[in-house]
Image (cartoon, rainbow, N blue to C red; front, side, top):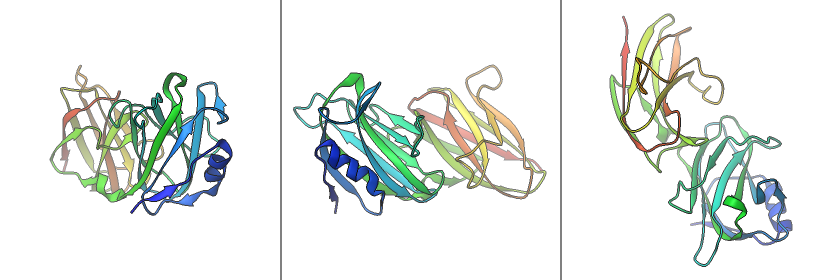
Length: 244
């Protein structure tokens, strides 16, 4: 059952934004963007702040109800930061937006709703906590997948994480092929996906496919992230070979 978020004037939204409640159940509500709402150089916006645990996965949706002229955009920020961590325009099907966001660390996060091209009007909003482990798969020799609106994103691009355990000094060859988008491979230490990658490759062998040879610096579990250079839906194949 959804908990209703009370949305009204800018003052009411400001109170909501500073509440920093934990997102433990689906919450939904509606509001109106414009009038006395806060605004910046990109136009009017409303904020919602939730306390999230490291690795917690959230689906946020902003939808245009019948009769509204708003084209909603969703952005996710760390408090006090001007650069968004994730952004979506039409991921929920034009003109609706949808983001699946995984918190890189525990803390409060700002979910911002704004209008494309300074559009204004009523909107519906929904925040759903999802199982964070649902997106992490075991890395097999051959992994077939597909990016679409149900796949998580970092910023504008889709990704899927795979876990593999390696011994110190052990080598692994990873290749990612797709005929529908420009593939990218990133490798992280497990749990460090919010930081810098240990290895990354975009184009390999003169193509838009990616491939790399990675040597584990220490014994442990690693995350192989299948992702892309620019947003695009489509199928991919991720192949992995652990060398003796």
